[in-house]
Image 1 (cartoon, helix red, strand yellow):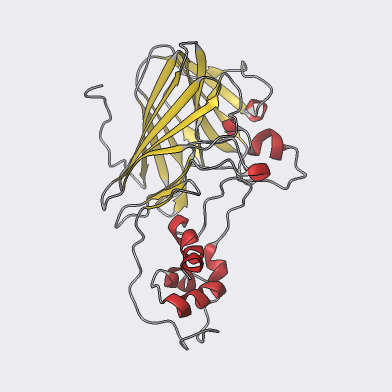
Image 2 (tube, rainbow, N blue to C red; image 1 turned 120 degrees about the vertical axis):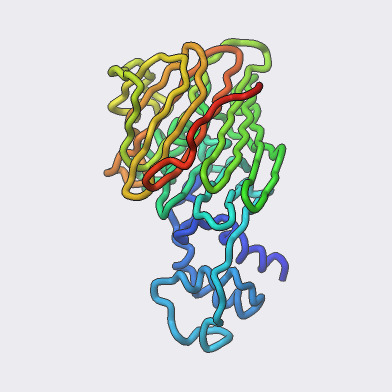
Length: 338
């Protein structure tokens, strides 16, 4: 009985406010509310009020249920909290009273259906999906193997323009709260003698994102931090056309690329109707910022991206992702100590 209960609970632990599930690995954007018929059975068995979230969200909600009570009971919407599925390696970061939701992936590779994207995340706020994952195309599409599975197609770090190895990440910290949730994750070795650690702190107003990558033998590497977001992209960085990326490991699908080398803090904005996102990153010497278009869940609709490259024996990327409707609620972002 406990295992059956977990089967009903797991999708709710991961669901976005619009009823969709994260499209990690070989998955499309599944709408959980389309599975309402199963949650009728779950509600009859366990009377869990969270199951009403699925049943009420179904577009063809019926007056008489197939199982149990003749109608849905009265009740207020349930506020879903942050949840961790440690064996699956998926965490969902939520805060009370906000639809800002972040889904993080760090678990087992997933066999033939796995993607090389350890420590990636996707997000949702203000009624729309923001940080994007390509999910999977039809298996007959060439881009399924050359893009969907590749590290550069996800919101994580690629090293030396190569694709990550199959691996399982490690949970280092998990601190869920009503107003903020923090998770710290480790991946290694996803590249030979390279370790990557990511800390995310999520609130209603922002996601603090700190990635630290380092070589264990002191060797010099190229560290490419990727972020893909739906909508249009604008920045005040003085960008110029850039065509010096490789033609393999997913990089060949990066189009309309422009770039600049800067050392200062920088900002960029992704805009959608009513659901915008500003990203700010703390500067570091000789940082190359690249923008352009990649592929998305719908191959007909390009998804804009930002790539940040730093070279050395280690690299640290400190970014702030700020969702907003009209004006950003965050006035500044800076480092006050190391």
